Image (cartoon, rainbow, N blue to C red; front, side):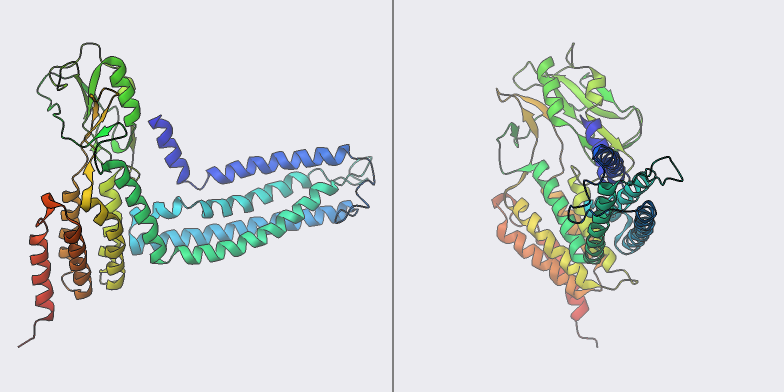
Amino acid sequence: MPRVTGVLLRVRESFWFLPALFGVSAIVLAEALVALDRSLPPGVTDDLPFLGALSASGGRSLLSIIGSSMLTVAGTTFSITISVLATTSSTYGPRLVRNFMADRSNQAVLAVFTSTFLYAVVVMRTVHTQVDDSEAFVPVVAVHVAVLLAVLDVGVLVFFIHHIAASVQVTTLQARVVDDLRGAVAAAYRDGPGDGVTTVPVARSTGGDGAPEVRAGSDGYVQAVDVDRLRRLAAGAGTRIDVVAMPGHHVIEGDVLARVVDASGPSGDGAGAGDGPDPDRVRAAFTLGDARTPHQDVGFALQQSVEIAVRSLASGSNDPYTGVSALDTSAGVLVPAWRSARPVTALVDDDGRPRVTLDWPRVEDLVDATFVVVRTYATEHPTVLDAALRLTRRLDDAAPADRAGLLDAHVAALTEARGRLVAPRG
């Protein structure tokens, strides 16, 4: 399942899948409509609206114009998309390029144009004159469908121009990043126990108790962990699996991914189980890749939002208002998490026994890292410091008793930095 998940993630962020799928569909549709045309009695379409007779030369000309123009438009849209990717990489950071790669609208536009080209080519090869063959044949229905597709493609082109203009706006990019962050937080944190998970601390194997270790078979970042599969494996073997390499961790071949411990005792600790789950099946629950992704990696999801703020403060950009907006939009996720969220510590079975333990970062650590980065790069931008202080007030207002006062040091440091900027010069 995680391998399938990893493949799906890579497919989603690729430019080849939808064009390939649409292209195959276009070829099948073209062959089907040509077969329909061959099965129709001669002249049956002459009296139908919009399906008047076509000569072979006229049909070829229409299909040739449609095919060549769609291929040209496809090349233009691809060039525009690549230009946007280059601009995004240099302005907002290379790690945010995946947001445009994963944009289904861009993929669909490219797929529509290329599939229309393929459709026109496949239909055009079936057009015959009496010179070419003993009997002329013009697939009237298929040719008119090509005209209909060309009309629809004009609308797709207008949509693409609007969409690409909207997608390069920083507010659109921030909305996508915040959506990623919200999804990652929902996967890693809960307001309390329930739904087969617990937020109560669970003792984990430290590696010195003889618990069998499942090690990585290759290098890469942990992009996803199929925790439900691990729970089924652990429950079936009567063991507990402690996940060591969480999403976002970089591992090399031989690094520990998880430890399998005996879950027969009341606390589930102790030496490793004799007949634990198959290590290969446990290893298969971890998806490794060349780069971090925000789907389960809450630290990376937050880092993307912070990176927008940091890059906007660079001397080449000098756009502190983007930094302000990044902090304000992040508050919509950080404040609810600060109010009540606790990291999921374990997945439990029906009896409440921990079967999979996890090691998500604490909300406090994520917030601390955010303010440290902002304080480091925003020392010359009072508006960004004001936004950071506004975020601390929002967090303080929502803080539960055990988190009250945790931000005092950040407030003091931000206030001091703000005071140095506005202090009168003597």
